[in-house]
Image (cartoon, rainbow, N blue to C red; front, side, top):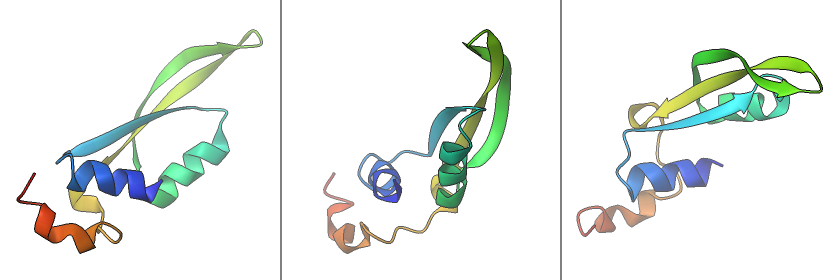
Length: 81
């Protein structure tokens, strides 16, 4: 969720967050896109399900691409880390 992404960027000082999703999972892919994740690449035929091969889609989100809405109230803690 968005809150988890903000936690990673704000409290853990991550530069980026990467997710991998199976190509047949359109719902998850759309959720990640709504959060701001962008397509980085795909591993073609990486997953086998019911004797059929599916791509593994790799997406990422950079710290500079998201506005911290929920954890912004903790700005004073940022330097205390």
